[in-house]
Image (cartoon, rainbow, N blue to C red; front, top):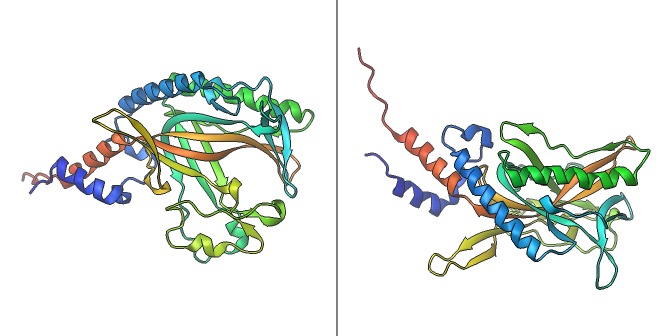
Length: 308
């Protein structure tokens, strides 16, 4: 008996996709309606951009409209130092880090670390939560990539005379790709005054990360990445943003990323610009779900008998 779309969708909802589409976005081309998703992304990004412009603050801006004219580079940390783009807080004058928002389609993500049960502390320090998004060459996303280059000029000017390695935003079949990461652990010696933070729900289902905490490693406030899911009430049209889990994000989902630029000094004394992940919000997973259902239905169709 052939499985219906309604039956598949019901099972997907109950199992939360059950890992059926963890492959990179490139593997979804046969079923994923990329042009429709790109049109939806452009509308979503435009709406968020307009809303942020009307409620604009210097420390929370849309990447396409990022204003860094009054920004300064501030050195942070007592151990391994980093440099952040900051602006003075109008209330107290203290320098606050500039965090930007950008919307895109997820091409790849690794937000829940695996195979960490027998990991030592040296390898644990390299664990990250990582996500990559693309804009399918849509206008707002490409404007954001242009503005990202302007923001990086601040570091180039600050470290004038030193080689600066810029953030890589490779161009593929889907246009520019922007990746952001955040370390799961930090050396305590680098942040001696920070207190440890709890892992976000769904990030450490087996307790393996908790067991890696030690006198040397801390999961502090700077390591926390927050996850949200946008929902709309069909009867009232009201939109809400609810705390969610890192495991809900799939390649092909439309998401919003909050991140900031950080410069670090590498072992060869060069300056490297990185993108630190602060939060991810799921905006729309309908195109991923439709592609998943189409894939399952395609596989479930009986093959025609070969004519002799």
